[in-house]
Image (cartoon, helix red, strand yellow):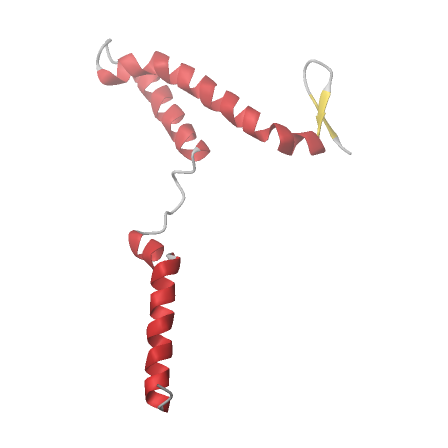
Length: 106
């Protein structure tokens, strides 16, 4: 097992990384939200707009979008309809009935 060393002198093993991933993700989101709370007044106009805070805010929103996987494509409503078991079942039944009618098995 390989250990990842930290500045404190103790490490986190590879087998512990997957166990700690949800905690680390939550901690990351919490810290990004703290940074955004400082940047937000400069972006919304409550305080004088400062380009440094606006740029930092853009980067925070970009990182949050990646954490929540908003940059990945989402299947459309048509795809969801095709995957619905009821619709698939009805389509399959219609095809079976059509095949039976053609074969004369009614």
